[in-house]
Length: 379
Image (spheres, rainbow, N blue to C red):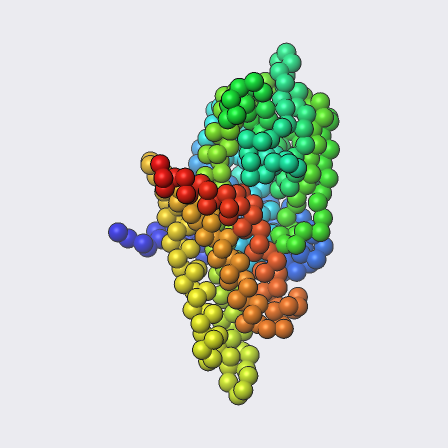
């Protein structure tokens, strides 16, 4: 058993971190304050092969698989997960198209995304249905050679800046609970779509989040992704992958909390010595380091498994659960180590603290992950 990353993966890891330090860090504070989206950073990331790195080379990607993409997400998230989302989540939803779409759909949409020319949004969550995926109400009704979509989506990442939605809709309302749904490619400039930016978020403020309404929106039948009535199962498989990416965000943020805390503990003095010499500070740093290292091994194993012939997607649920808990724990400890300075925006840890909480919420709450893992253990 060899836990060493291949040399090309180490190079990718290093490149992603250097890119984030050079291109993202100078804008982090401003974009957090202004809630500013950053298309220019996304385009630079694409030029460096950091967009859609999981996409196979035949469709324009770097072909480094989900493990390679995980390393990119981790390193960019060490610097800023809000701006980072504008980079590595700019194709949110395309994993479904890659896994279930037609060859023509893949050839049409994946290369442009990898070049940084298009942005995607997964139109899933609704005002009254988040964790309850089977509770979505948005409808798509067949009308000749088109489908007509009506409904409302909420908390949609990239919602006001995307070029396309991958939209989850009910197509067969009379079918059983999990066979009601299908997925569609919906151009964001289609008549009948209203997009409203959500402002005032606690964290990830540079990432675009929106409320999206669909009123009599027509899409051609060719925009169906996969098969009718299979949308729920497609979405569950999609989340199996994206949970790993969220856990990689948590890993990067947690590492940043540890980095900042080690630095501050060596610089800040009290009672005539650095606070890092005190046992209580050592305990916090030690517990943070243990949490980060255990999370790293779980995240890497989950990503490696997703690239294998026999993926173990339960590892993704475990990584997502442990990732959110670790990020919140490390952010809290970092603020405590910084004391009063951790509460003001002169120091990075206050932003890390605000950003961390979302990692326990989106892509499946920690409570949802407990249910998924618990049920799996008893099957």
